[in-house]
Image (tube, rainbow, N blue to C red; front, side, top):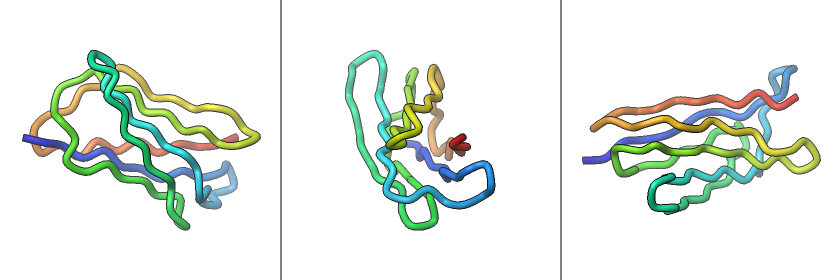
Length: 86
């Protein structure tokens, strides 16, 4: 019983932001998973435990940390959150 979290990181002009650190944290337990965005700006976490709440953060060097917090995952859900880097 798992879910998927994915999205794309782009600039305001629509350019992909590659090589960016992305972290997914299960807030109740502190369990953390890390990925790096690919050349298209995409990231994906597969086989994520359902429930939550989760915190998703992107650490874009020179631009700061961008977050999406307090979301829950359902069985077989694909949670999509894109980040727009300013």
